[in-house]
Amino acid sequence: MELNTITQPDFTKLADIIWGKAKDSVLQIARNSGLYKSISISENTGSTREFSEIDLEEYAADKGESAQSERASVQQGYTKTMTTHRIARDIGISYEMRTQNKAPEVVGRLTSLGEMGPKRLDLDLSHRITFMTATSYSNLSGRTVDTSVGDDFQLAYSAHTLKGSSTTFRNLLAGNPQASKGALENMEKLVVEETYNQFGEKMTMVFDILWSADDRNTVNMISQMLKSKSDMTQGNSGVTNPQESAYRHVVLPRIATDAFGAPDTSKAKYWGIASSKHSSAYLGVWEEARLKSPDNLNAGEDFSTDDWNYGVRMGYGIVIVSAPWFKASKGNGDA
Image 1 (cartoon, rainbow, N blue to C red):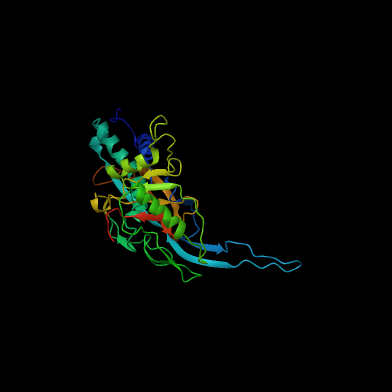
Image 2: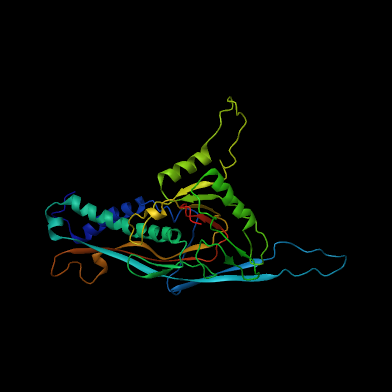
């Protein structure tokens, strides 16, 4: 790629291509996991969105001959307000880079810039699980992020409350065992015994996601649990695997990180199950990741440095309204 005669408008067209390919190459694992429901927010419609639960009673009532039918009770559940925030990062393409044929440096900078927005979103989404036992955390920019759900408790907790009942429920597995066949069955017991609507009635949810951090022992154990089969000709012929088609394993590589994205081994064994259909985790996107180019500015070239400046911009919000759809274990044996 020759850069010594390229003009600023031509370079911006080239930058768009390089940046776009880099952005599209990022595996947005958390966003596409099924754990979050993504909503596109239109411009000029405000900086917040309110998300609420509304539950009906589970069952119809008896009706006698010619008797008036009973009206179903409606229970307003918890509410969470999502507020957008923007992320950004800039780079400069120097005069020397674009006039001395330093193509690798130019491509490297634009590629890194194209990956920054989607990677940051993936980190923020993953950190809702990383910090699932806290009600807030301080992110890499020092901003306090609210990670509580509608009842003001942390996402993974032993005594979540309901609006229309005094019943409490847990979605953090007692003893926080590592992933294993027995631990998964106990997690499934939580689904059966600790999944309620706002009236305190048992809800039936299909849990179809088995999620984990990227610890290799955990990933391999889950792979064995979900994929192992018995040879029909062996002595244990006819043995089937009840979990084989029950779950889709989602490995979230940024769970086991600290607020700055550095490895945090204390979160390495995190795992759990979730219901994609009943998820109340929402991602609101006000501004998809985009390239900000010099031709969007009054001056395409910095007067003092001769740099052409390019940047990434993105705006979004994240909230989780309630916890019944999410079951978890820290995998560290905590009581």
